[in-house]
Structures are given as C-alpha cells and as structure tokens.
Image (cartoon, rainbow, N blue to C red):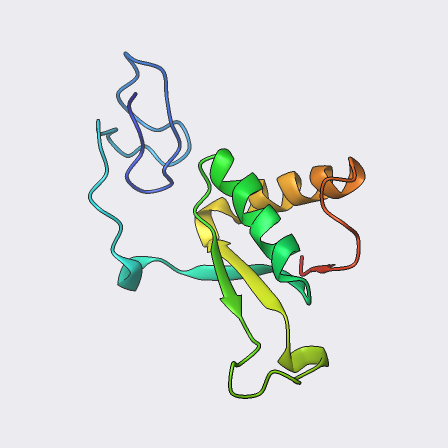
Length: 118
C-alpha cells in the first residue's frame, strides 16, 4: 500500500502522489528514527492500566504511542502531577489519536478520570 513519506497517509494502489502535500508516495518507510519524530502529549492519568489501555487502543489503529511513567521507583509515594503516566503520540498522528480517545471515553472503554490534553 503506497504511503506518503511526509505525512504518512496511506493510499490505494495506483496513486503516486499525496493529495495533501504532493509528495511522491513510497512502498515502505525507513525505520523510525526517534530523533526525527516530534512527540505530543495527548493524555495524562494516574492509572497505569488506563495508560496501557490507551496504548493498546492507539496501536490497534496503527498509531505509535509512547507511555512515560512519572512515578519513580525511588519515590513510590509521589502524588498529583508527580505521579501517573503521560501518553504521547507523533505530532502527525495527534488529531486521529484525540478522535479515538474521545470516542473510547464516550463508549466507556477509557474512563473519564484522566485528562485529555487537547
């Protein structure tokens, strides 16, 4: 399936240029280089299980997802802003991730206890 190397949109076979940015489509993308990916935090929760549920939801939709635990093993009593997990996605996948999380919250798949940051 052809894919745009700039915005990473996928296209049907036979299409050769991205309709959004005009880039020539490729068959495969180079391996992800994390130094070239800009991450945007999209969700924060004190519940690590909820963060993993969101990761699973996003990855099932081919959205790369990164969970950063704020709680330190050295300070397991941390609370508030110093505890929990932050969920981040690549900037180019941010809008789709927000849409999926909102839908999951509305459907009760993800609780409304965490904070959607956008």
